[in-house]
Amino acid sequence: MELSEKVRNRTILVTGATGLIGQAAVKGICRWNRESDTGIKVIAVVRNREKAESLFGDWQETVQLLVEDICDIKPENLKVDFIIHGASQTASRAFIEEPVETIRTAFLGTERLLEFARANPVRGFVYLSSMEVYGAPATDEKISEDYAGCPDPLKIRSCYPESKRMCENLCACYAAEYGVPVKIARLAQTFGEGVWYGDKRIFAEIARCVIEGRDIVLNTGGETKRCYLYTDDAVAALLTILVKGVVGEAYNVANGSTYCSIYEMAQMAADRYGNQKMKVVINAQGDAGRFGYAPTLKMNLDTRKLEALGWKPKVGLLEMYERMIKDMCSSKN
Image (cartoon, rainbow, N blue to C red; front, top):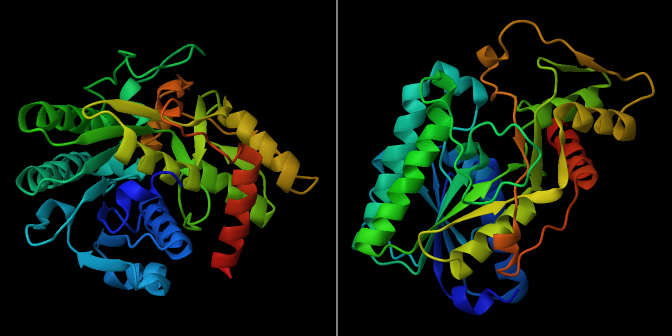
């Protein structure tokens, strides 16, 4: 990987390290370190030591655990060269049931990390934002980073995208006023190995239905269309943005070839990996927002800006499901 010389013998702080993308980042860096002898050290910020030890126990030569709530983190005594900040609430139902906590975790945690980067100059900082900052686009047109859509600020579920927007602005302000070298990654919905069997997000529910041989029941009409992203492709993108991205700018991160509706994705999984009797059933009754779902949208992300830095996704939607289903089966057993 051409990025190796820029991060060789450096220390990378990863927050949200037991989350799906966080753990993929930690493990990906560890594998890279072992294969290429880059001398990288990872400080993984976690809340649950037992969970972290079960995830990273095989990588003790690379990983140091820091057990802290991101809102209380005090990393002043740590020597850090790069930061990947991924700590965030991601459960859709929590956006409805704990909106204040969702905002507080996003803003306070990001402010803490930016203050640390200001006081202890780092070489690079990437903030994990979301495609949801664009609100609910209504057409299939490609969405570049300068798209001006926005969520409805009076909708309770908007606590998630609005907190991401505020944190993006905070990052831009710290870059402009204090010179913090922060960049922003606007990720599409990401999955692959490491998805918890009980994860409530739609991609995990589809995989569970396939594994358990039951119909895939959608609580919406399945019209929402978006791009998806494989976990390892996300990690490669984050590292690319970390060392090659422009300070204060945002980058869409997605696999454009995966753009489809939720219904189409469910049908694809049923046809390819399900049994012959499996069906996709629409059970849209009442307000789907009570589940914490985003409004119906069409999120066709334009990734040319990121690809200009040398990144390209490698894993398509069918293979993403194949790998996730295999991993979920092994973790279940």
